[in-house]
Image (cartoon, rainbow, N blue to C red; front, top):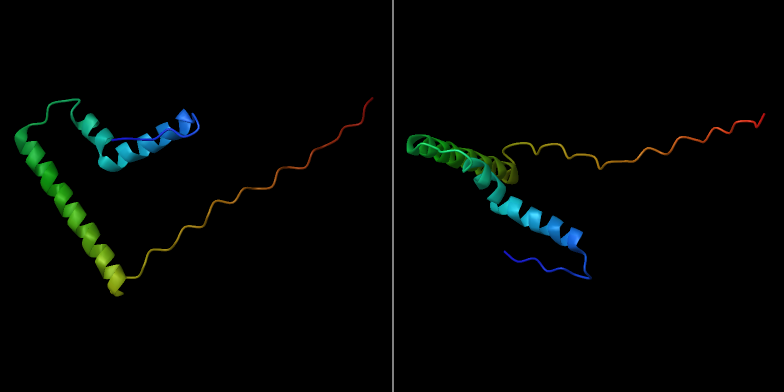
Length: 91
């Protein structure tokens, strides 16, 4: 995995690296390898993961074909305006 650092901006490069690692599943694999997983448990987990992926793919396909309604879109986050400053009289 390779990330280019532009204009000595290491923070941005780290964010990009973390995002790539998240997509690849590196963090999930590290968490799983912290403790031993029996082969039978591993097969069960992999089978359930495959079923979950297949269901997700079928749901997306059904939405594309119009068989299921699309989920509602989230509203973009809106910042609230700052509170007005209260001026006190000097005594």
